Image (cartoon, rainbow, N blue to C red; front, side, top):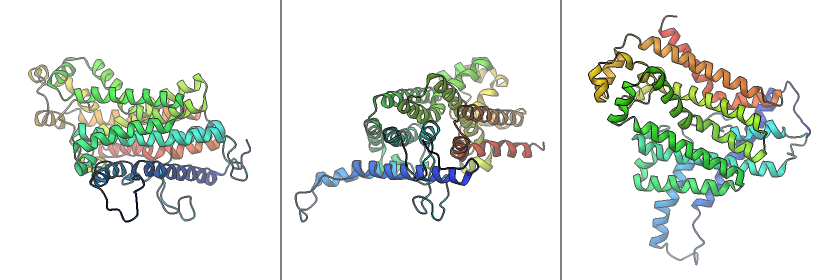
Length: 389
């Protein structure tokens, strides 16, 4: 494949990132239209039937809201002359894999691997839609009324329709992926994510809380890592796993990427857990994790909890909040976990760069992953400053 980019052309790499992201947005719009376009009516003057009206309210509207929302998701700020005009764009790990293993556009802007690009485009849409479905279902399970600053889907349309919409999107995404290897990969990712969610939800029960409180620290940490790798690590692993399935990437590199995405998932979950204790990042959502024991910070501090509360599983809510926020080791624990998140992110990015085929690919990956990665570093810096270090 001919490469039009000069080795030092970082702006050219970012232009490719934007172009790929715009292509994904275009494909998503077409996918959404296919799910929300009503069948042709018998005549232009025929009145809308009750069935058509109900279908619009109960299916088309919630699907459009679930897939179409862009609030809180801007990654590449609008730039004059960039692809998709002034629309904000989100880079895709699926397209990074395509660029890494199939190269960058040639001098005329063409892509030589038309069949691979088509499979990757379908995979990228499927991944994004599956993530949207997960959001709809997770918000119900977590009782989250707000998502990206907007009312959650179940708040706007009710729990039954939100459940139906999330389920429909899963089936539609898998059908859209088409390629058997990609579908198999996505099915495995969905299973891993649902398993992690089951473990997370279980920490709201008194029995699981009592078991965790009685377990030694090492077992608690292992519990958290298993849960986070499934629940959050899957969000990072799924795009790459689907892409490499479409592209037939060798097994050794697939294992490297899997481990790197697992580490990025752990770093991301640590970031999410820590922000519950840092108002600069958590905002109004700070101190919301005391109804369960899935937050790593809580699990780290349990050894010094009163024996009676640990055994009963009643160390929850206001009692847990009082115990943790007044804990003498809280600040030190936050700093240690923030440093761990930074190191996990660093090692993951280093591993991925080890399989990058070019400097262009490495730059593409940096642009793609740093939309959240830089926040992990900022959180650590914020905690250091707050600690007087």
